Length: 238
Ligand SMILES: Cc1cc2nc3c(=O)[nH]c(=O)nc-3n(C[C@H](O)[C@H](O)[C@H](O)COP(=O)(O)O)c2cc1C
View (cartoon, rainbow, N blue to C red):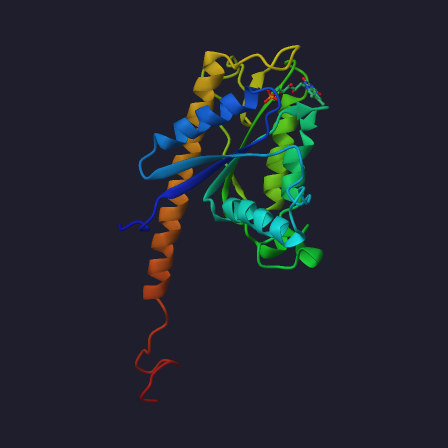
């Protein structure tokens, strides 16, 4: 089977105020790069909404800056999205970025909050990571909020699932999560960093299967287009 003539693109999108999510994002990208033919890049989400006009920037300039961000999101084969748990859910800058997701080519006044209409994220692979201050501070719910967002966009979710020893492993089956401690900046334990690299590699593999599978499926579909059959509805001599 001949795969597509390009690398598989993984984009690790994250917001990090104190550095924990940043470390996880770097580890996830490193894990993704273990898979052959995969490129992994980081996209750090800013505190300020992407469509807030910056000082010295025109509205058109903002549109171009936003289009560049959104094109990166839309063109990746997989998005691995990380947000700290804030009040038991994903931190708002990440949600806001997706809420602002317009396509670059449609007028933002009509379509800026309706990315699903453009199906730009359909079939894209997605996975989630987070950190919370305390073990029961909402990390599971934060992962679910990211995964729910992805489900709304029609993405194909990848989760680590339960890991051995089954029902003894402390990791969440829904994604990677670290405990950031009372100051919110405790670096992730080694086993969490390992889990982050594993998730990156897992997503890279699934994205590769999907991209290659789709490439082959499209080739087969092209080859199997209805052809004129003697006596059939496409018979050119009839
Ligand atoms: C506004 C705010 C709300 C927070 N809410 C929670 C929370 O509900 N539960 C929790 O365990 N930790 C909470 N934290 C701690 C963060 O989850 C922690 O600082 C973060 O995971 C660290 O990630 P970072 O280093 O990438 O910023 C909160 C922190 C902030 C700043």
